[in-house]
Amino acid sequence: MRVSVNDKIRKPQRHKCVSETFAFRAAVLAFYDTHTDTFWPGIELRSKAYTTKKRVILRWKTERSHIESMAASSKTANQKRFRRTGAAKPLSDDAEQDILDWVVALRSHGMPVSGKMLHLEALDIAQMYDAPHIAFAASPSWIASFLARHSLFLRTRTRQGQVSPLDSTKVAQEFAATVRRRVVEEDITTVYNAD
Image (cartoon, rainbow, N blue to C red; front, side, top):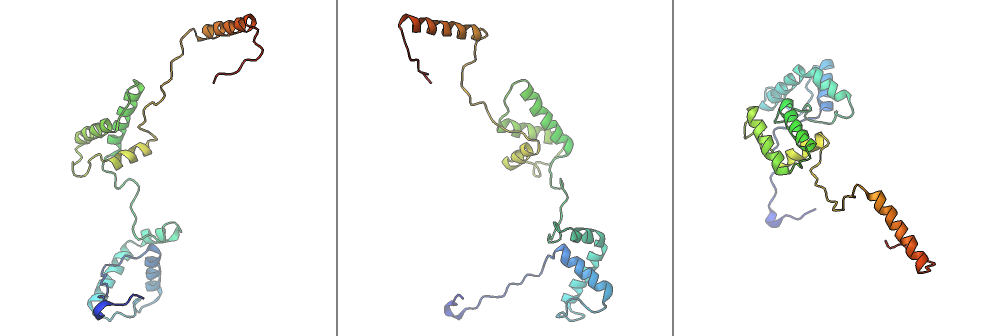
């Protein structure tokens, strides 16, 4: 335990807004179905805290089907909030499809796409779809999630090898014949690999 300096006592935390899990909300609603007394016994009737809790429970009753479906799943029972997939996307699906089509079109012509190019094109398409600039900035994190959603990568070719000529088989055969001729001419018994 930490010793207080100059006998100062830390003030207790005053968290007024407490968010409950879906399992807890379902338990409270089930309790109120079978009981008439209050679920929170430490709260006095006709107090501000009681009125607040009563208001919260009335709101939970209106959302009962959603709360019970979330509490039924072990994956979501301990969650406190739920946001549907795609609810936080700043662009519509059509706008994202246009960006994806643009990337695919450039790549099909052999043109590499950089992060800056994707950023500028995404801003142009967002402006075409009237997305507010405050809501969509084509940030690096958005670009990363966009690329991950569509299994794309911003990589450039790093191989710097030579392109083999069209008559490479003929050249290989001529080289093999030259090596065999030199082996016979110079009476070589052991040939090593030069890799």
